[in-house]
Length: 129
Image (cartoon, rainbow, N blue to C red; front, side):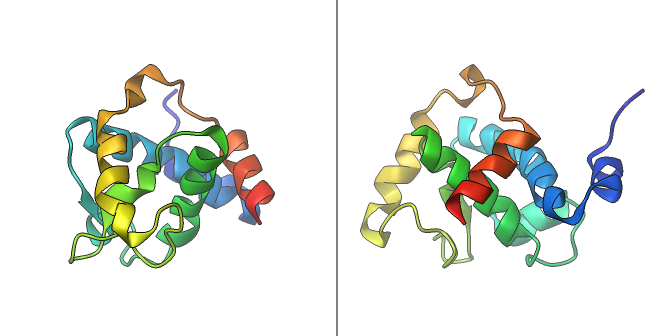
């Protein structure tokens, strides 16, 4: 039987939903990073079935905290506003480091890393809060 993210989220406790969606977003982001592409917030929201960007804050926060705590490049830096910069919730690099950090993300072997589990994303979020 195929498991769907939407089914998993529907049956999850409130605090677990963003961690589940973080795993879903992780897949999109590592594909984009591998292709040296950025992704706008609205496009990511649409890919994930959202009508606006609001749910992305905690979802991307899970990924940002996980990367930071594991010493990985800041994967969420490739999710950008219309001006090509990350949103104000991104705190893993100063604005004058955005290009350098984005290049680190593009050069990293994301497909060589085991994908984080939902529990690992949740643990990273709790540790950061």
